[in-house]
Image (cartoon, rainbow over all chains, first blue to last red; front, side, top):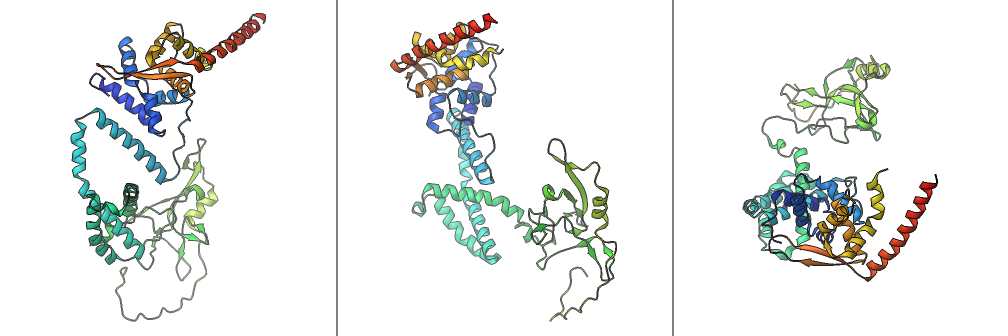
Length: 325
Length: 106
């Protein structure tokens, strides 16, 4: 299609309309929007006061008049399908932008030059996934060295027999999805030489008791006195945190601050803000919290518990320095 | 009462009538509808309606290449479209008479 006479704002508008129809088969979109630029140009030329409408609303009108299904207003459930939808519409937009604006080709070739970096990155991601599976970092090193040539050769199209294009696309999508997982798992930070916590936003799950999520933990010493500021870890040094179950528990924990400045959620008992749902269904701090529950959160279930006789710990086989002493 | 709401129900027959008169491309049909007095008709509604009537087999379509700008897609009526238009003309005439009688009687 000759585009030399189409004003850029009309071309942009038409692209946006097509993007809003991107959930339909490409053929349908073509049929529906063929001549759109010409029609718009003519209509704009005829009425100079006319402004371009909202492309999304325009697309909805077009779609309804054509008797096509309304675009599912609910975003697709699940990160995977939502990402796929975003990716799909972004792809359409990029393809059209390139089609309409040859100078963008310059950018496309620049982006293309970055592909080798992506090949290395996806090898890193694959190695990390494998290491997660086996729970060993040395696996990651070996796998990475193995995966880099595979990924690069694959990317260069040298080993096309390794799989169909769809497999490559699926693998790339999977690798992209793995990046946030990698980041949140603190893979990089665990390689810091300094003592640091991995990113410690409470996980979705967190501490639970018999399947019931915990929103706080109250510790008492052997004499039965309440303790505050108790930092809990498991044997691997993972901070023991409660999950983010604010929806269910309506208890929003506030983090404690370490001397390093890090905000952590494994210092108990946590300061809790009682939350409630307002008229709009949003979770907001409860303006008039139940005083009994608030007191229970602040003071714990007991002011004092019976003193406990603690069995002597078996002597360690060899003395180890305790990090907290 | 909002005329645009009423228009939705009769846009098919309005578009068929305009195209029966003479083949037209999207904006040309919009312009002719507006000239006929349907000033509030939306571009996208007309383009979508043209597309739907085409899919339903009531219109033919052909592309006219243009030297200066993008191609134009013309729509023309066919036998099925004419039959549809005749039927809808009768339906409209009956409905309009009924409504007029009802409104004038009250």
